Image 1 (tube, rainbow, N blue to C red):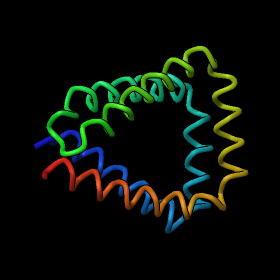
Image 2 (cartoon, rainbow, N blue to C red; image 1 turned 30 degrees about the vertical axis):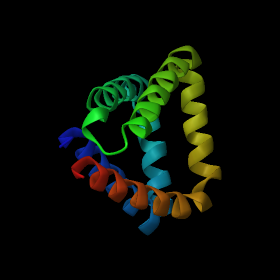
Image 3 (cartoon, helix red, strand yellow; image 1 turned 90 degrees about the horizontal axis):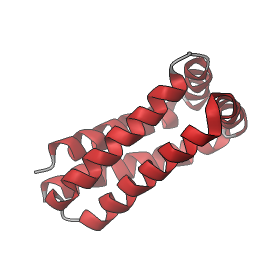
Amino acid sequence: MAIFISLWGVITFSFGLFMMLAPAHFADQIVRFSHQRYCHYIEIISRLVLGSVLLLDAHNTSSPLVFEVIGNLLFIIAIILVFMTEKYHKKFALWSASYCVKAFRPAGLCAIIFGLWTVYVSYY
């Protein structure tokens, strides 16, 4: 059983539900978080930690390759964020929060499905 991957699935499901039910509020929270001084560093560290968890625990799931690919992508994104700098990361967050609100509902549905699938494959 991959408990950390299951937990990530529950978190993904929860974010997806939030995105589907309140896309405008979700966008507001992105804007609010992007104004925090620590936002850029939290995003980098969380991707590195989550990528490590996925890579280390992928073999305990029924679809290890999927989690290995996602873990590696998270590492690559973290490296890109380091070179992107805080200024451009904030600009991107503000842009996505304002222009992608209509995409949050379908993205939320995908996150819900993926979160449920993640929990399922981490147990079977």
